[in-house]
Length: 312
Image (cartoon, rainbow, N blue to C red; front, side, top):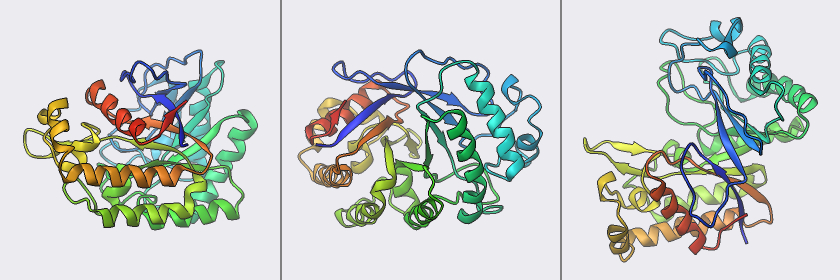
């Protein structure tokens, strides 16, 4: 059976029978205050999508991080060795005298100034430091796609990127692992709301099987169509994602109807492949990045439970 450790994301609640074992704590460069819980937590560090003002006490005096920012305020990540020194100080300030995080989630740099080999060279310094200072902390990196940064793309977006970096992780004997964001991976591979087939879902998961030993957690969230016809990310359910519903159409009645048509077939194919990918005896983290209603999270979790996933 596939076992997942539920992580509390923002203020969204799980179904009543599921109690999250840890909470995700925002740790981007503009965070003004930080509430470290008494129980386990994951620090979700800067993900370089929005411009940052760097007016927090935690970034005071961090010259090399601030100096790497392009016009418009989008921070570059893993820019050089000096950047890493500032980032270590930033995390030290955030954690303070509190107990260390169970997870530190990091994000990849852009390809206009970095590549996988260079990133690993710089990251290795950070991993050595954090495992000395916080030896029980797990470090995970999220595959990323899409940003307001205009000069380059994330170096870890597509399957080929993930496969390449696992080779570097093995070669350098690093502890770094993935938190796999499935919707971002699908989009990076040209698959999005309205374009799912069994064939392209199978292709993604067949490739992921080769690197599943490096996956220590997953991000799951839905998409739906907004009022202006655009796609709302981190919103909705798997049904709205695979079937192409508008955000206003997501009701239990609507979902019960579409479960009798093709989207149910596609959704089941996705869940079957996800289950098979994670069915290797390892317990992984589950981070539901749903920014819409808690009801949508409940529906996603219910789908997964029905398919055999166990939340522990």
